[in-house]
Image (cartoon, rainbow, N blue to C red; front, top):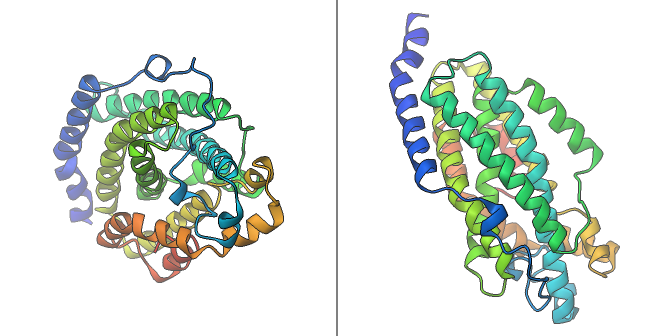
Length: 303
C-alpha cells in the first residue's frame, strides 16, 4: 500500500514539468483559425477535400467507375464527416479534462495547461464546423447509439481510461491530417486547417501520453483490464463513426453499393492499421492491449 501512494507523488514534478513545457510551446506557437484560415475565397471544386488515398472507396471497383468530379466531391464529404466527428469527440474530451481538474490548484502548471488545451479545442471545433460548412456538407452526426455511449463514457471515464481514449482519437486524426496538409491535391483552406490541428494536437497528445502513464502507476491488474477494455470500446466507436454513411448519397453516389464496398475495402483497412502502429506500440508498452481489448482494435482495423 505504501508504494502505491508514494509513486504518483514522486512522479508529480515530472508531471508539472511536462505541463510547463507545453505552456511554453503554446505561448510560442498558437494559431487563431478565424484569421489564419482563408474563409473568404469560394470553394474551388477542382480540389479534393482529403487525400484520395484516404477515401473509404479508394481501391474499390466503384472508385474506378467514378468520374474525377465525383471522387473530389466524395473526399470533400468524407473530410467534412471526419471534421464533424472531431467536434463530437472534442466536446467529450473537454468535459473529461474539466472533470479531471475540478477542484485542483489552479496555480499549478498542469491545471493551467489543461485550460489552455480546452481553449485550443474550442477553437478547433469552431474551425472544423466552419470548414465542413465551406465544403458544402451538412452537419454530420454520429449514430444515436454512439452519441449515447459517448455521453456515458464522458460521465464515468477517469484516469487512464479518459486520457488513453483521448490519445486514440487524436492519434488517428493526426496521421490522416499529416497526409492531407502536405497534399497539393487538397483544397488549400483544408490544408491550413489540418496544419493548425496537427501542430496544436501534438501538444495534446504529449499530455495525454504523460497522463496515461501517470495514472497507470497506481493501477492494479483488475483496474488495468477494465480500463483497457473501456478504451478499446471507445476507440471502436470513435473510429467507426468517422465517416457517416450519408456521405455517399450526399456525394451523388449509390449509397447502398458504396457502403457495401467501403465495408469490404482492404486498402482502407490497411491504411488504418499502418497509420496506428505507433499508437498500438504505446498502448502495448502501457499494458493496455489485453485480449478482450484486441478484439475491438481488430474490429476497428487499428491492429
